[in-house]
Amino acid sequence: MNPDWMIAQAAQAHDAGASERALELLKRALALEPDSAFAHALLALVLVGKKRLHAAELEAKIALGIDPESPFVHLAAGQVAFARRRFKVAVAELEQAAALAPEDEDPVRILAEVKWALGERKAAEELVQRALALNPDDPAVHSMLSRFRLQQNRLDDAERHARDALSIDPEHADAAIAMGYVLLQRGRPEEAKEHAVSVLHQDPSSTAALHLIAAIKARQSFALGLWWRYNTWVAAQGARGMILLAVAFLVYRLALAFTKVHHLGFLEDIVWAAWLGICMYTWAGPAMFARAIRKELDEVELDPEF
Image 1 (cartoon, rainbow, N blue to C red):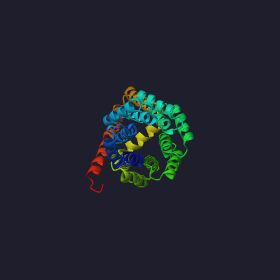
Image 2: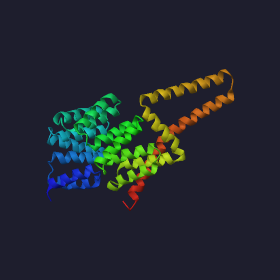
Image 3: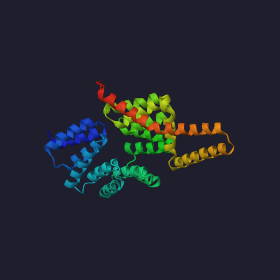
Image 4: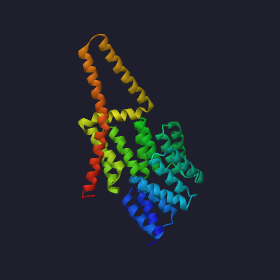
């Protein structure tokens, strides 16, 4: 079978979120054409999606060695570095990709995500708007904007961009996940779950979809519901959230001092116990959420329907 055809099919499968099919096609293609820089770079991206980051890094290095002037190769290397939280390397690779392909929105879009992760939100906004100007019909750009707006607690804008992405590509996995989180924030968990399930039908190992399902269960859970809402709210506040947490701690210390000055021993115990309970709950929440995600992963791996 023609390796070029298999690589093209793998690219389509990757875009559709069918990572297992993409992985199998790329393995077969590389067995026939081991010097394809594009195939190695695409395989690196597929492996990033499967959280096999060490293997992804090796593939990206092979691709760079074969064709160091390819914008797609630098794009893949940047995404691998970003996944490994090597932000300086990611920025350098993505800037190189953007310089080599100035009309391509993908390096600009992913660079925006890196800047957002670094807390450079103004730079991220400028980059994502530039990516949108380069290609206003890219569902990935609209999906990213939906996530950004959701983190800013701008639900209407987040929903608009998610719907725009889905109208362009109804099967776009990132768009479906973005819409799922919007619906979850709007208190419509069953509709959110439908979007997660639609992604899992394309790719049963999709960690993004499993995270969404775990978030849905957390919101509906008595034990995790309050923590999920609190965590979502703090994330939406950005730097202001950290300031509010510092103010909350200051209020706690002032309340404790007040009870001591006025010799209100019973109130002092209540204030201390309440603060301790809040701290323990917020510390335990992430571990409980991680267990929920692991449970979803185990169920997907063991479910014969998949």
